Length: 260
Image (cartoon, rainbow, N blue to C red):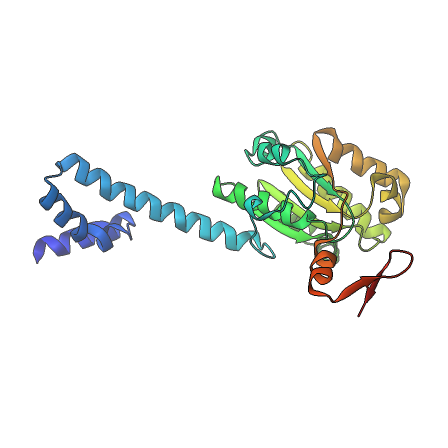
């Protein structure tokens, strides 16, 4: 009993949670299969390392605030042939993240931009990078509130600290002058220091309308696109396709959706 208590105490001091759970299972296996002392120790250490990795992934996934969890394996590349699967697999190596480069997904609503952004975010977490997800609207509202409270520097640090910042839905709402300048400030802070994934339903030529200022939009794009990869997605909306399959949608004479 004294030995069991010593082992339990040692594991607690070392911060090991998995070894106490599997110790006797591995000890019994070692005895039955005549496993060497070193192999027995290695098995226990590998169990603890796997548990530690799982805890890290769980913590970073929670911190990332992803809207859902979808992987590249779940993306239907046959439905969206404009998305190069090989290119996406290359992005999933996180080479772009290590070089503080940006990835921008452009395309109409429902074509899978957010799915791909989240999938890369999950892969980054799996490779032990810190990730944070936000919509453009949530981002600027947060920055505006911090600016009013005089805590803008602290808030900017929150958005510049993660290795990967995902900003979804740029262009769904136009920004006022103050919000546009705060967004520029964030982009400038992360420029060549941290990677970003951005999604937008607007082409770059329309970003002047988003920010209400062509000069400011040019300055933002200049920093975003300097080291970047742009993925243009041209295809049908997954949501519309699912409605059509379910018989909840039909097209009118002009080919426009008609909800039944």
